[in-house]
Image (cartoon, rainbow, N blue to C red):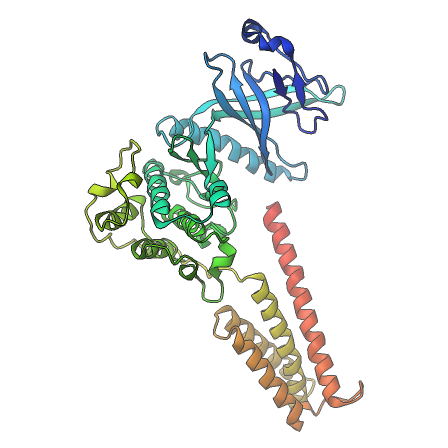
Length: 476
């Protein structure tokens, strides 16, 4: 039998032990050690890691089996494996997420058939490679779901039909209704966290980011970009409708086969996906659009409300009987739900911020601001001279341009038209360029050089501040 070493960086993690092929030896042997690094291989005295399933930023997952079960039950062993570059604060946050997943699985998984069960949660202290030191590792063991994630299905077979998306949507809504009713919010719904078992059952995975509402609904900054709603990305309070938003993003990805960044229109602060999914059922599309509203109060407020809305599709005959939910659950089957108008959502205590700008429009806006700033500086100095008043007037105009862009009063073609008009005015109205000395050959060249340099400087400053922001968000 081959056992896989779970020590990070082990040069030869695969270990072969012929004696473990004997059932009696397998059940009775106390321990086996890695022949390369000396790491104990039988975890908690019973779990035998067989192969590496995957590795991420905070941990690794191994396929293992439990030697103390009659059929050598397969399971997943997750190891807490933080990066060495994490600060003490980040390390504590990462460990909290790992322990939170174990707690959530213990409280939720053992009560619902579509959430993996927790089998064990333990720590292991072993001698380090360096003499006289010790390494401490944390593990959780959970139920192994033998199947494919929605992302794997999408990559293998292509886009989903409306009926197939409705099936996934309904099954996950049933799970979310159970989770939300117990005061928890998942906060990381995405295709890789939804898995279909070989027997057809659909599971919701990865509860590391779950948040108990009773303990405060604030977001910790841990989210999957593209799927998380604005309130979660901004670190504000999260709601059950935050999970519904992420679930809707998952559904439109399955319908279109495109990534969220290709479907979100940052200029209009809205999702533009229907043209990429002509096969989408109109009622389903309307439901998803409401789930995708930027402001939490405009969305459905519970999974039950969405299930009620989905009943309209079932009663219209758009869904085949074979796709109706067969999972045992406390939720009422979708086909028996009455069609009722969902209650008016309660307005949350905060306003959701405008969604962030995409990189191309961020750079376009920076370039426009720099170009306009250069032309404005030429015009203001020409008319008012180099005084504090002219500097203040120029600064106010520049801030006004930035505010109009942030509010999307001017955008896209407006930026190019306004920049072109400003350039023509400065070039052909002498009073607006009287302060320019043709040191670079002629006045026109000087104006273009000044505006061009201002453009490059504005773009460089914008990129620098974005880099600082990304680094701070990653470290904090």
